[in-house]
Image (cartoon, rainbow, N blue to C red; front, side, top):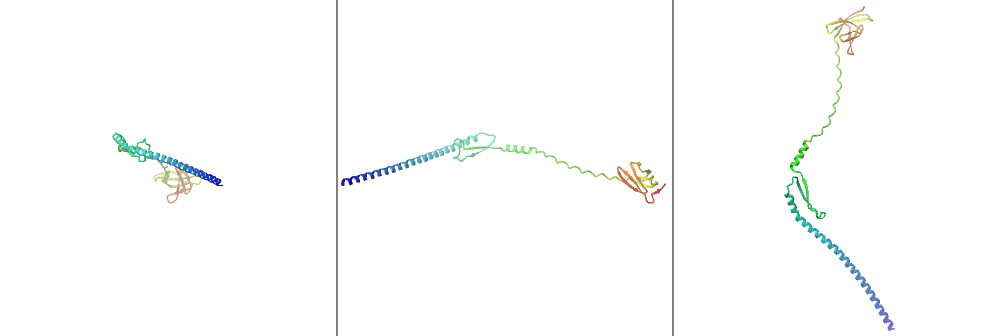
Length: 215
């Protein structure tokens, strides 16, 4: 019985030892994995740190060369003036690109020349406005001829009239007769119609100065 109990305790001790060894190996593996990952992260941070240092060094080198570039540019005689601007954006700047940017500016003489050309440039001619059509002038009214009826002679079918023109000349006229450019259109017992250039004028016989003789 003693041998059996001792062998059982020995087997139990071995089992415990195996379990301890397994747990120890698992813990050691986890620790090593953590160290490896930590070393990898440290390597990346170290690489980034080195890159930043190199960038700072390059930027300082550029600052040193800026004064040299300015002296070289300003020493040259140029016909067109220029404005130089300094780019402070180091993070996005091309390392091989100059930090100075040149922008040409017109001289005062060139500005005056451009302004003179603009002033002397002929303005586009505007189209002439159409002239309003003149309103038709009213035709002048014809002046009534100076005629005085002295008397009438004849019957209803054959009437004649004694007329005095302009207070001097007297004529005996009948219907349809033309005298001094005037047309005798109609003769009645109390009225004589005379036309001038298509316009008719009426003359009446009456009063002591007009004689009406029936034949």
